[in-house]
Length: 460
Image (tube, rainbow, N blue to C red; front, side, top):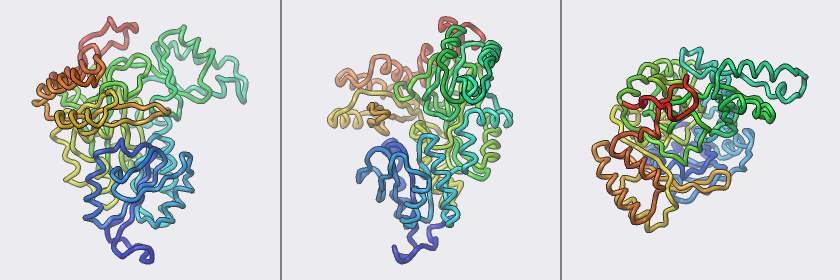
């Protein structure tokens, strides 16, 4: 592995300086404030770090080092060329979403031929985890649960290449056997893009009338709570961040950053999850995970069912760091510098309560009032498909939650920060350590699709 005294090109810089290239394909501000510790680490280890990015703008305080913009559709070969031209000794991927992770994996493979160390999953692992059907097979082989489903061939369903008129009838027969409600998911897309909710047979026939153009996964839509866990590491040495809870499942998918997400100690789910930690670790080792992944799951009836595995950092990385104080980005640097596992970065025994929720856009004066009153880790606005979303990330020790709830209520009355339903959820979370029962039901997935049939909560 690379060390801080790696041999470098002395014609470009003084000896003993290590150059590390970081690649990012989403606004770097989404990683604030957790990149700031890198600044000190770079100085202490004589590292020059350059950010190669494709999205947003990078200001002087956004990244501890130089930055270079690349085209949005930059190729693996072009990434490789730029990193080699700069004279990098190491290469780390911070990219989102999956297609950019695959680009970085291909670039890392090419860079490895030039002796450049990396913290990037292999091309094979990135391809497998980007492909939802391949992921399901790997999860099943690891002895873990995943929703019942099947692979839809988009060519056959859309009458391309080979005419198979009975293919739609075969799919209908299998859909009926799976049982409604169902979800169709594009085989390769991510971030919830293209997912279609199929409540019943009528909705199924509507889907067949206008099917997805490409290949897709069809699977049972389980009713419970959406959650995820970030796993960081390599070569059998893995650290699991706290569970992140993202709201109810069983209806049409919702955009993650428009709802309340949180991480907090929950004795019953935490106890149930302990049983699958070893299998997830073994799966990471088998796949050769080299960096960070996010395992997305549904918690229902005391069981965790894996629905996807993202081969990258994610939109939940900041929330995970806030809850555990285990800085994913520092972990990735430690891995590159052959200091893994790092005991200073991987202590997750004591978790804080952390929550992330949508807000109204905040002007500078309101921002000062909020950050001086509440334990705000980050308050920012980001852009997806040209639309802006404001959100806030808070973290605190559970005993102080009630005090912060009172402060938030007063701030909201004076500044109209949160929508009424969001305010109610955050107040309940801060005072009770969980979301209200109407927000996080555990519904029997064998019962008709009706929220009035909600059973006992999936809560401690």
